[in-house]
Image (cartoon, rainbow, N blue to C red; front, top):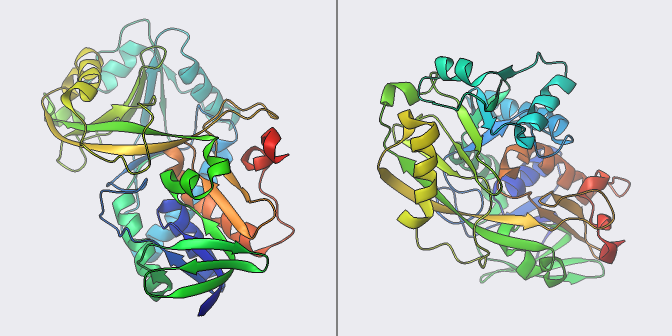
Length: 379
């Protein structure tokens, strides 16, 4: 039986960052995941995610973004590969948009100049857009395209032979965690579960607090290719009303404009990855582009599906749901990590450090808004 101090089950961006933090600290750690970089399965698959410094979802996220940014820059410097491509973030919505107001407040709270623009100013600066005159608009700095495909490859390469590329099952014990693959048995003093949509299956008690949703993603052939090229076109998030938000990227891969709904799709199971996004699922995205970003609108040329793992609202702290869970599992040597919805990827270096500390420092407690105790059943 092979032994280690900490095992990490699930090596997407969160688990990969945790394994990297452990190994950097000299901890005897192993990572387990049958899904390798480049796979079309797993919450971290695909080439890119949005990095935003100023987040409308939660005021706690700005400092978390700053920590994560330092980690991404460190990885970029050490590897010599591009991890972050700096890009402005345009957020716009109907008059009184809570999204725009919260994002604006987050920037001002950190001493930034007011990022508010009129719609006419935004349309002039970025000619691919035709935002209505009365819409609220902010254009933020501190944004970037996070090259997740590059990051996944770098994380696995840095971990080298500390990765076991097999499916693993686990059994908690009083003195640690037994882990078994098809070929070998392991024992870890602690285990981090960063299983993405499969976390609720591994811990049914936690599964009651998690919903996995199907998120359609499309790439659109732009009507004005020059207007949506990197450097001329921002990352964007458009708030068209309740449960109708769309986000997208510049055409930085010469693959078309990647765009998708920011709101949640139908609840599915953790293995429901197919089929690829349908025309019907992507039609509202195409309509939003045609109405508000005509320079980016055009035929669908590629499509994909992501699975978001969404956390239920807390009942003991002010929490509207979709936040992270990063905590020790009660009466066990397990540490659990559930990313907040689909946008948690950008925080991976900061979350990985917290997971590593939870596994190695008995005195460490994650911030209250990450803890299981915000739910009555875990208080």
